[in-house]
Amino acid sequence: MRITGRLLRTTRLILQSLLTFTVNLSITASRGWVRAFNLFKSFGSFFRGSKRVIGESFVALFICALGDLVAGIFLGKMSPLLESYPGLLVLIPGAIGMRGNIFGALGSRLGSGLHIGTLSPELRKSDVLTENIEATIILTVVMSIFLGFMAWIFCHIFGFRSMGIMDFIVISVAGGIISGAVLLPATVLISLKSYENGWDPDNVTTPLIAASGDLFTLPSIFAALAILEAVRNGIFEWVLFFLFILMGVLGLAMGIKGRYNLRRIIRQSVPVLLLCSALGTTAGMVLNSKLSFILDNPAILALVPLFSGESGDLVSILGARLSSGLHSGIVPATLRPHGEALRNFGIISVLSLIIYPTIGLLAHVVSVSLGIGSLGLERMVLISSLAGYLLTPFLLMVGFYLSSASYRLELDPDNIVIPLSTSMTDPVANTCLVIAIIAVIGL
Figure 1 (tube, rainbow, N blue to C red):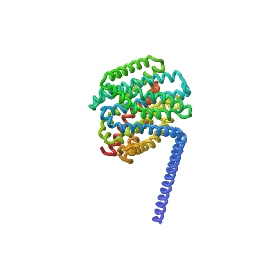
Figure 2 (cartoon, rainbow, N blue to C red; figure 1 turned 90 degrees about the horizontal axis):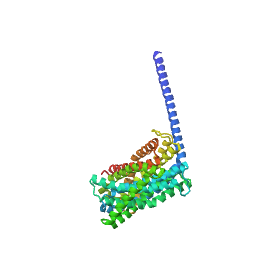
Figure 3 (spheres, rainbow, N blue to C red; figure 1 turned 135 degrees about the horizontal axis):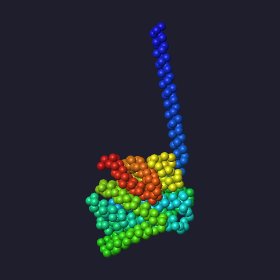
Figure 4 (cartoon, rainbow, N blue to C red; figure 1 turned 180 degrees about the vertical axis):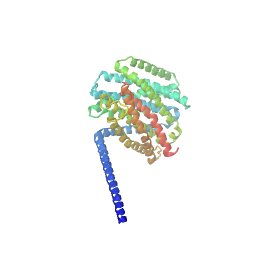
């Protein structure tokens, strides 16, 4: 009887333990399912609320990718020029980035003006529009001069073969003026007409303008090289050099002493763009350090503007959206992202998951089609994706903290965020690309 009683008690304890375990497991599983369901609902709500933004942005990014691809083709075909004009590769990323910085910031300012009602979408003369155009012209000349100086100085500091300083200045400023003559009206038209047709300029304007900058920068450098060839080592090169310097000095003086909005744009933009030019030149140095490998694998040259351009477009979309949100009060200027800021993080992350493999595929297809030696489809897609996913967290943090910090410091994010974030992105993007190449190919 005692044995039977002990057995019954033991059995009862085991059954109670099993029952308790089962109940706890059921409760835990139920909570997990509830959380998963709520998370699924959150994702569903996110995609329902953001599908228009993602759709508009992806269309703009894909169009930009095609423009960047053309720039990549130009760069892939520039191998002989990179050898004939030593140091040119140091200048090119900075020149591409500068166009996107100046005209992307213009597009962002126009977008914010349209959102808050200080600018009409109708294409007519206004003080706001006039002062923005004047500031853009001045910044183009001044920053082109500085970029030429920086490229020459960096080449000498790091022992790269290089052209003379006058060659750098003539190429940089002439290229800036030629591309600016196309990009300025294009930026104004894209900004105003996209808003008038119901598209959010923050999702469309900035990446399209940045892609236009990439597209027109390299042809403008070709044109500048033709000008340089016509005047090189003669009196006319000296004339052009001093004329460009005079234009920069007078333009800067006019901007600093101009009307309030013009003065504000120039004073806030110049220090930022000076730093951006230095960062852009650093990006060129990263590439120049691998020049021999790049010249042996021109498909990498085709990928460089595509990867850098799309990365700059992503951080520009984030910066433009956060800037408009800060101006309108939707995004608070806090040091911790939450609410609308996190939703924008999600949008950029989804776009990066899609766009980076896509650009690797595009670079491979076009390289093979044009007879440019490719590393192979798998390697090109893997390099682009790996580099892009390494870069994405950096894009999110830079875009958010620059937006929030500039607004808290009572600076206009439209003048600060896009130029600085894209310029900070360029050297990091090229570094991530080099890391991905080393990891995939094992240089």
